[in-house]
Amino acid sequence: TQHIENAIQQKKPTFSVEILPPTKGNNIQHIFDTLDPLVEFNPAFIDVTYHREEFVYKKHPNGLLERKSVRKRPGTVAICAAIQNHYKVDAIPHIICGGFDKEDTENALIELNFLGIDNLLVLRGDPVKSESTFMAEPNGHRYASELLEQIANLNKGKYLDDELENSSKTDFCIGVAGYPEKHFEAPNLNIDLNYLKKKVDLGAEYIVTQMFFDNKRFFDFVDKCRKIGIEVPIIPGLKPITTQSQITALPKTFHVDLPDELADELVKAKDNKEVKEIGTEWTINQSKELIENGIPLIHYYTMSKSDVVVRVLRGVM
Ligand code: FAD
Picture 1 (tube, rainbow, N blue to C red):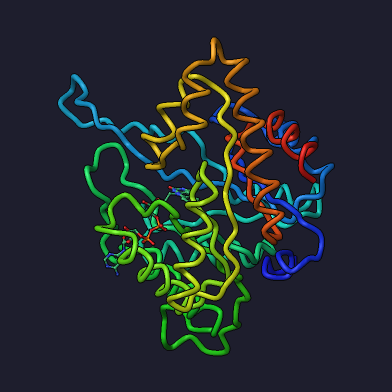
Picture 2: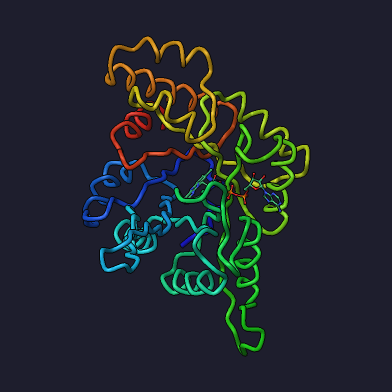
């Protein structure tokens, strides 16, 4: 596998995609069916999201507590290995703090390393439904930067067990998340950016942004990053809006704004079909403007539906 940094330095504009593991009950063919039409356009890499384990507890009539998993999308690591085997395209698993202590993390990293998965997107993760704020595991990591430090240590051959002899070095290339409209918990954008800089100073080699619908927000974000000394590539993340429900759900879930011009058009749309037309066209125009401004790589959030992103790629690449 190649380091993502190299993929970004290509001369021709290129792209990457993010997919989700399929919901439990589907097989790997589901992933290949989603990816086949996208791989034809030669993505630089494919990200696979991570969905952590979560349980609900119910009192059984015999008085004991019954534990039930409500995790819907397991399989991230195996999907990445399958993608690399099947398409020979670099796959990037998202790796999170939530639900992992440091030992779990080390074991997961060893497994990834053995599988030849060398690129990671390192994240904190969101709170699970039963938590109001994010809770780290005992002996786990509270922030993406702490997880990143553990990975950077492993790259130097430093495992949790100090006494390990002849330990081999891993070679993970680490990406992190950035938020042009600020992370929802941060008091303001500048404070958030200082924590982003910390992630870069600790070894992050590139940044992938949260989705945004107004390129100006992205350009301002990049300017601010450069001013505080963040020099790594910043990859813009785009998501075509495809349904009427997303018009309110995306801003609510991802803490992003829709510019007036787009929002006005979308609320006037009669049905999902019209929304999809407007959303696709908007993403095509956003992509074209980013490329005209010298952005070498655009990351598309597919939410596991390839048809719209394929239409965008036809219009852009
Ligand atoms: P961090 O960088 O740790 O930041 C979290 C918050 O803490 C921010 O407000 C930051 O300003 C603040 N902060 C950071 N360091 C400190 C410090 N030392 N002291 C005080 N405050 C600090 N979630 C998943 O569960 N699975 C996924 O697959 C997934 N993929 C994603 C992909 C992308 C591209 C993006 C943008 C997000 C993704 N998420 C995913 C969501 C992500 O986990 C959440 O947005 C999460 O709330 C924050 O993650 P982070 O890595 O940005 O956190």
